[in-house]
Image (cartoon, rainbow, N blue to C red; front, side):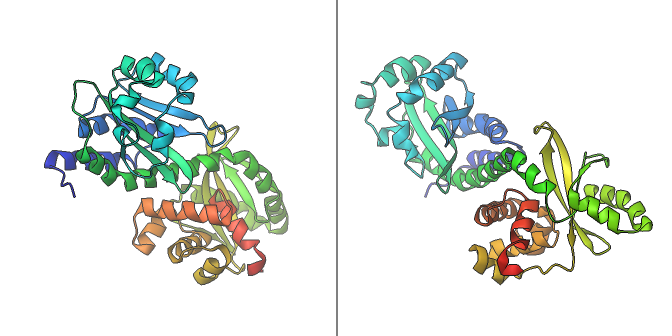
Amino acid sequence: MYAPTREELHLLLEIIASLHHGDSSQRIRQEMAHAILQLLRADYLASYVKNTATGRFEDCVALNMEPDRLALYEEYFQYHDPITPLLQQQRQTTLVSAVITQRELEKTEFFNDFLIRGGLHHGIDLHLHDGDLHIGDLRIWRARQQPQFGQREVMLLEMLKPHLIDALAQLAALQRERSNSDNWQALWASYPDPCFILDGNGTELQRNRSANVLLEQIGEPERATLPGFLQEAEKNTLGGQLWGDYLAITTRIQYAKQTQAGTLIQLVPQHRHLPAAHDLCQCFGLTQREAQVCSLVLHGYSDKEISRQLSISFPTVRTHLSHTFSKVGATSRAGLIHRVSSSPHFK
């Protein structure tokens, strides 16, 4: 196995550290592009995410490539690209020369009218998947006068691959959650638990029908304490807080056509039966660790507190939570709690 030099190890760690600071797939790929080229001693980089609905490669990030060349690829050459479909099938870093000989490549329209006109000659690709979902790729090239890529570059990208998959899979799940915001609005309105939306600064924006029912049922002293409690719950980043017989679950959301950030606060009755981890495994097919994470979410723990409670890293918590969302059929913490609590197995 290739042993990275001290300089290469420094760049690898720099790239891995950058993965946990971006708030989108595009931002992460932009942040690491320069370091990737430096690590691989390469000249050009392009990166796309495949839209599963249309089959198009979109959300481009590029370094040292002309915008008009990229536009040409997106409009025409991605449909006349003989190598990317072959490279996409690979689940590991692959040299372009491993799927097509240089001689055969140079006979193609793609090489003569696109690659070489942009200076691209020697290529290496890494396509990243979360299960069957394409979550991003790295298409890295050297100029003709440069040496061909080899096993050094393959091994360095393979060292990065699990970290890239973890980070991009989490952000892909977050994007799916945001894209489903219109769906959760309808769910939230008829949700059986009292729910409130705050604007991020302690001001209540909306409440659902269950919240109105609760306010009609409680006395004036309790009603007077609720606004202050919601403000404190919105600030809380360590876990659930109790208000009488209710546990507050906070979820950061996008509202107003996803243009504004806010906080959804759900009040979960504490008399409700919460299933044990082994019951979650049997009902939803969760792994033991996923069930432990799910159980802590049901008890109001934040990602940071789950990390401390289970002695696992924050990114690992997000990975388990993403898998749990998928298996349970939810796109948010509130949806997860609703799906579990409304399951006939736990009535």
